[in-house]
Image (tube, rainbow, N blue to C red; front, side, top):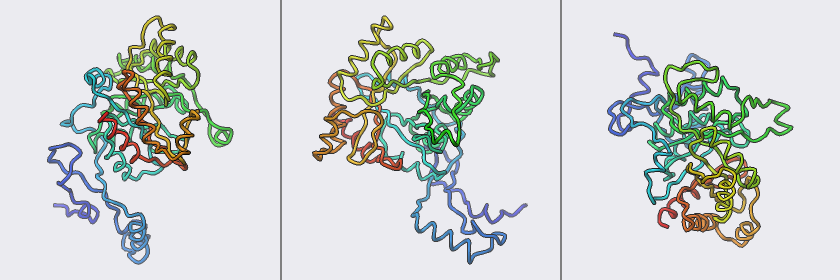
Length: 366
């Protein structure tokens, strides 16, 4: 019988945890080998091992559950967000925005663990920066933390072949919900290093996902099976009510099943948009819309215009969490029970998920 190698003995199965509740199969705790970085066949303890120990001490890493992304067959199927919305009744439903890290460190899962949202929405390369893939991170969150997720994909960066292949991979990882966006335009500085693809518009891509759900790819070739993805789109009423209502109608015609709305600042703005949509479409907007509530802090970054009264309250020392809760309560009073919560975005791209959880916990009691 072959003896276990050094690395095999070091990575002993840990039966205390599992990415599937009640699953007796082991998951491995990811620990860095003390010999990483050596140049002496793994035995250079004086250099590489000491540096590794110093790095570990400085970074104060915690052991993070690290399991395969492929879904275990005994794990419950992912939840379709439109089904969750339809079954929620009068109970509020919360989606919380989440940024992928600019690293491959799985410690990011600990940030998602404490968020008591119904769904975690993993953004696509915020700030046009190199970040972990949104679908892969969404799968890691779901399979390790048993949280419902969705992931965002941008048409800016991939052609049709890459987009469709990416979606097949997402379904292989057990994902159910995807949000299609165009992606922020690249800056002049960005364009010196890379270029946009924009092979297809978001509305066109939404239509092609509907075809994939029926078993056909963009070439008209049959897939081996339907992919059954629940596809969402974005709404940004800050770009103009009439323009956005017309674009929303095109996405509905293409087959969109739900929407995430960029931050709004009053229930009246929501009512105005829905009335404009009704005039354009000739009917009410029937797809679920999760209306954006952005938590701002004094030093946080805002995307899009922020009303002067919000800035004034922040300058007066009013916590951004309280301002956000006031808006959530206003939306609740207006009959809106589906919220897309955007935790503060700090300079440099860090997020204050503690503020997000504070609002989530308080909003549950409204």
